[in-house]
Image (cartoon, rainbow, N blue to C red; front, side, top):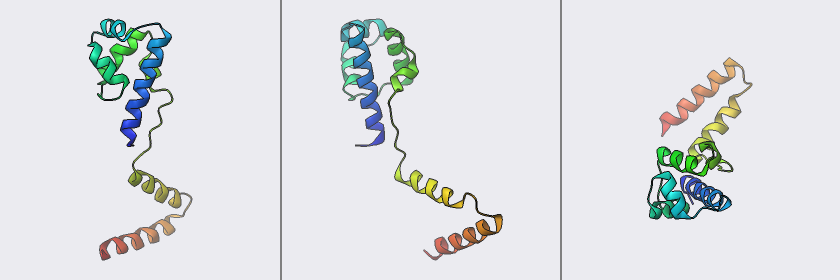
Length: 113
């Protein structure tokens, strides 16, 4: 499952948990937030991707801060970002002369392809 899908699932789960904790039905929450009941259900099931404005309305209707909807949300960066981070970590603590050599070697390898 992609990172974004996991994020939307977690947000939907948090909305459902908070709604139930407050004793609200989907209808109650929809009315308070000014959105359709169907849309609340879709957000809770992560079949629709709400805008930040919509999430703000929902969090306000729930009486919580917007940031609370993102608690426990873990974002996994794409593999490319992880590799870039690994390369940068390898360079930390190296001298300028070492970095220059590594840059020249990397440039040479990339140009060969």
